[in-house]
Image (cartoon, rainbow, N blue to C red):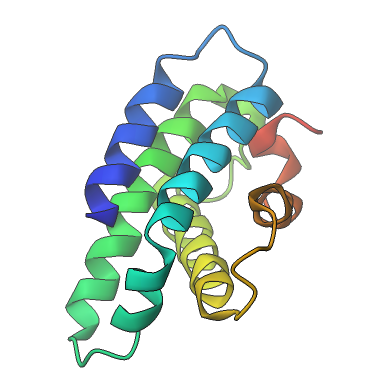
Length: 131
């Protein structure tokens, strides 16, 4: 379910090439957070299920595919010394961890804008167009 959402958001982000990178990043994060928020109770309950690490790896990889596309669309803005796949996996893993933390939080009334801002605040400036 989340893997499909990540892929859909990545496709939408990739088609927004003429958009300011910061606006495109915010729109992608807003769509992701809305998707998670709509399923938050289910996702919170599922965090305690006994699943293999393969499920987590699959989730991170699906997110990383979209991040890699976003990195590639930024051209030479990304650090030239780093492997694009490694960067994407690292960013996706951190994003999934932050989303998981948010899902576990008890305050279901917390603004979606707050988690979007939290996600964007830890993204590299070169990726979201802030630097």
